[in-house]
Length: 398
Picture 1 (cartoon, one colour):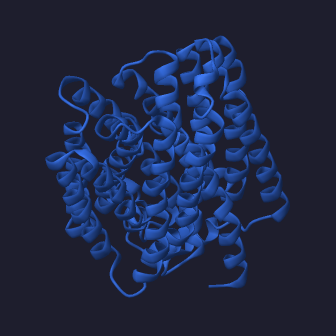
Picture 2: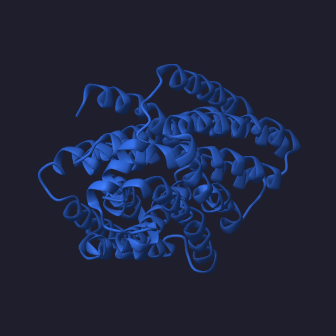
Picture 3: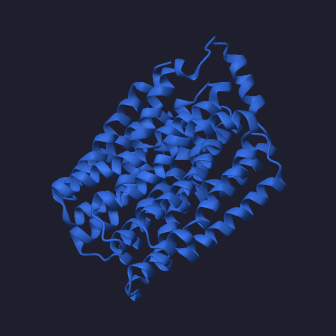
């Protein structure tokens, strides 16, 4: 890998850290706003619906936009748009209205979509021949963000909940934390602008010329379509489990929300550790085989949680985080391999597939409302079965 590419990849770690940090705060917002607005499980899951619904609505547009403005500009504008969404939390909280909160969250999420659409293909194009391992390594810093995010949210959002006398005051506790995040994001946008990262669109064109497969559309690549579906089910499963973990720990073990926020660190921290390990392992073992093994273990752990319940379920669900680790970067790299000039558009399609994070949690919420919270984990377990299919068969469909 060239020195300039190594420097660029190191710079992009800040992007992945920020995305992870902001996204995982939804897991804090769900129990916090559930209490503040007296929501049921389905209504509280609408937080994830609005956040990940932004991927479905804006993903393809941003994919096309990147082919025009380039990846570095996409990263800069992504930071700015995300910061604007964070700033909107201040007036949203002042209204003490749940629907207004959801609108602000959608705008914030749109910025994250642009960062996601730009960041993943940026890394793969900077790492020819080492796409899966490099993306997994950089994504480890995304997991660092998801590990530290619950600690931040638990300390500055959940910990003082009992002090508030009204719903309005409880809702307003998110204002200062999100304003601080906005300030950091604007600083990162300035840093990326000053660093002048390389535009890799020419690299993508070169890959297309070398393959000379005659394809005129990304939809002609079957492994991309099957991979996008795998992303849908993966994000849906990961987000759904993370969304209900704090509530599950309270339900099966009597652990309060503040303590639960500390335990959830092990779920996201496990993903961080797994990604560092996975980036090394996949240099020697085929990425699809690593993906298949991790899917099998996630299915097994979800089944154990459903069958045994109690503290066994709690620890089994937390352990799934470790095996989630390599799934997103591995699926992404397998699905976009050799797409060349279609890579940015393919990234937009995959970002649309991230809408799984909006669809699966409300479905699990409905199951939890009608049966039990622990039984509802059958939904993410079924998602892992499809990913197992992609790891064994689907990724070959050229």
